[in-house]
Length: 424
View 1 (cartoon, rainbow, N blue to C red):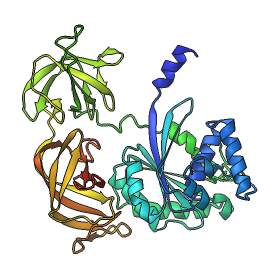
View 2 (cartoon, rainbow, N blue to C red):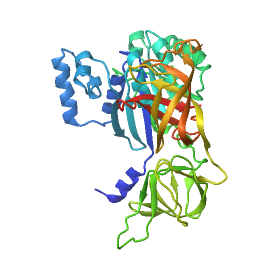
View 3 (tube, rainbow, N blue to C red):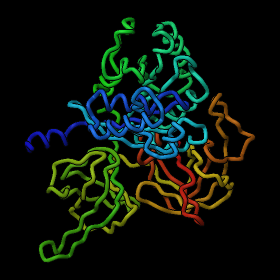
View 4 (tube, rainbow, N blue to C red):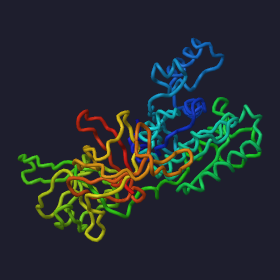
């Protein structure tokens, strides 16, 4: 294969997007249709779902089976777990997180959407905006997903009527005015028949917008990342102490914000010592600059005592440093949250213990009202809580930086992840 072509392919921009919607809204069918129409599946995969569709007694090829990989899902025709799929077009690479529609799997949507640039929320044209649509839009807003696409699906079942689409669009815009969502797009589609998914529909000439795939290929995501606030959580200290590199000392990790270059003056937290970047190394050799989400090794001109959990930042642009902060938490465990309970907390590469000092309020996801009297936080609940950690953390607000603004809580007894939080 041509090496130039390979390198161009690897340099293509990557868009991560998540799909959400109520049960039977057609999320898996939409993804299957997108993969099939964009020629992103192999012949043997197509043959396998053709045979599976026949066995189920269906008189059409059920493209939803491309993503419903779990046997329980195929038997019930629903999505239970988060299914990740990868595909590429000549313009962009994509990673899809297909998340479940059931209320009891809200936590799966939080997991799948936490790294997404864009969320596709499906709406059944016959049902319009329902409780689950609002729930998923709220979670997308909470997770600060920069772009939301409302796919009004099953337009074929309402005779492709423009009035139906326009009413759903108006209803959602009215609800979304209460949310912090800046970029919303609407596309009327039929996932089953392929209208406006990859090819422009001839049944909806009244729709002047682009197809879903074209929108995904062209939506601007370059400014979604924080390239201003330099953040480099140290994951590992590299000291080979070999004959070739007797004095090598590098700090490995993933850039969580900003742009780092050799010669930059930096500060190390928590010590506060300053130095300059000597070089930025990768597996393929030194590079001239590093930005998120690149994994690199930074070498400094001075020998400073640095270990895992420390953070390299700019001297005049430091994150918040503290042991007390509030988070919006999505509870992921059937065992209820314990007020004054002790948990392990992980934030970037730093780990400590913490205590839940206060449960400020629980959110009614359907009305967005704050339930200040309800302090019982169970599975899939979203609440604002106050935490105190045993050591200082270096953090930003989640809306400024999704990496340095997120935490997870772990049950010390079972080692299960029980909560995912966004620092406010």
